[in-house]
Length: 312
Image (cartoon, rainbow, N blue to C red):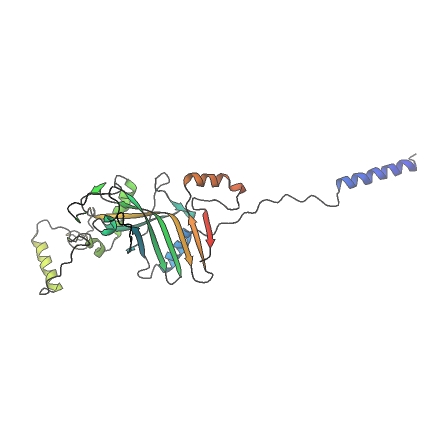
């Protein structure tokens, strides 16, 4: 028979087992470190700003600031921003942001202009800052980085401001990516823009007043007559040949200008006002940030992951 004492012992043993396996305060699961999504990048914001204002005339006019290499004085001028250049990942200028947006801004200029002449001779790039203001959106982008000049050849004689001016040095068109980008941009220019690169007078030289006795219509008629009598007419109007086709090789003084940014200061004045600073990390720093992302509070997804909002 099962004695009363044995039953009591069994009951006591069962109660002890229950107390061990069913604690009053169950163990809480270990919490993972909280991660915070990065704010939207400057490049994604710029894409939105351009998309909304694309139909507004002059919305792609920007201010480009440089420093004279001899006097140290600032120089600022308005230029036309003409899109972005895309390069493969192995290229030395590879620079993309989230969604694989290229960050290389492209413009163009005349090799004889002051913006080129004022740069250090023998250098292919200089530091510059571009300011882009969108009035309708009350947004401003200050984009800083290396400014590169891509010419027809490594050197050019299209400077000609003075007899003692040494040849300017450009990024060589032996780089197939930028040689093609230069040709593509030339083909996309408006006719008046192409025509401006065939002007005889150098930018900055003394202005010659047209003959007041000749009106524009008479000048055009004389020009047509000269072209008709010329057995091998040069492209004198709109950057087109005698058949009306765009001249394939641009003149040597046509220069592609590329801004390779590493620092962007975004300002928003509409609605909630704030500034956002985006900085591009160097490859070594980006790799270090990526390797430590498990312990970081930021999600490192590209070289532009260093983003911080500050007071305006």
